[in-house]
Amino acid sequence: MICDAETGVCGVTEEEEMEMIDFNQPKKSINLYYVTDPICSHCWAIEPVLRRFVEQYGDHFNFHTVMGGLLEKWHDGPIDPANGIYKPADVAGHWREVGEQSRMPIDGTLMIDNPVASSFPPSRVFKVIQKNHNERLAFEYLRRAREALFAFNQNISDKFVMIEIVNKLGLDGEAIINEAEQPIGQQLLEEDFGLAGRLGARGFPTIIMINEENKGVKIVGGRPFEYYVDGLKQVLNTQRLQPKQQASLPSLLEEEKLLFSKEIEVMYDVEQSDLDTFIEKELSADQYQKKEILGEFYFATTK
Image (cartoon, rainbow, N blue to C red):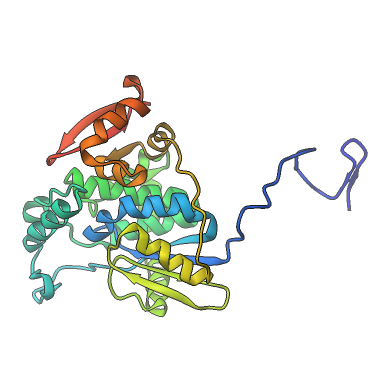
């Protein structure tokens, strides 16, 4: 036991002399598991809703991202016969349809001329970042990989594409991709596959919320925002939940770096026809660049 005469504290501590504590913050008694995959188009489609749900209700749960293993490799047999997918080129039309319905833009033409060979390589990179750094950076990598794949038509199973994405996070892309290619990368991925199996996740996206009594709800596929809130209420056994105020658009854009129109509309309950007015009100002209891709607008920070 160490007692410090200057601070008047017994024990090793780096705490401030006086700090405010908010005892109104809910105890995070819920574990939320998001079972997903880097090339899951419907996971890309729910990003606007999932971001708002985490932003407003994340104080109630611990968020865990689990890789599900959507595509190990292409083979001669059917991959997803329900959606008519037997070969990579079949994916392009399916992805475009998801993009048009969700307004989260998807090009998809690379699946015709430069197809993603497997979702396992970018999944292993996610796991290595998660292990060596933290969930936040791993989730940011996942977001950047999906932007690169769906909107900007880059092959995220390509080693050099993955290195570039990781480098832009301020990490050593080559070192992380090299580690992901070692046996540890697949070992970490297999652990996630095992967890997904125990959770009963068979499709993506699947969100499972479990309380302290080991009871919970499983929500499969993209659903409206209110659906996830209702699921959280069920797990917490409450009729009312007070949402946290959303971060301001300047703060959100600074954190996320890039937001599509649909994401802003969902986060702030803005009609598509009112978006330009909202943007002009919330952001100064030097804070963002407005660009268009595949018929949708996106906003990128200038910082």
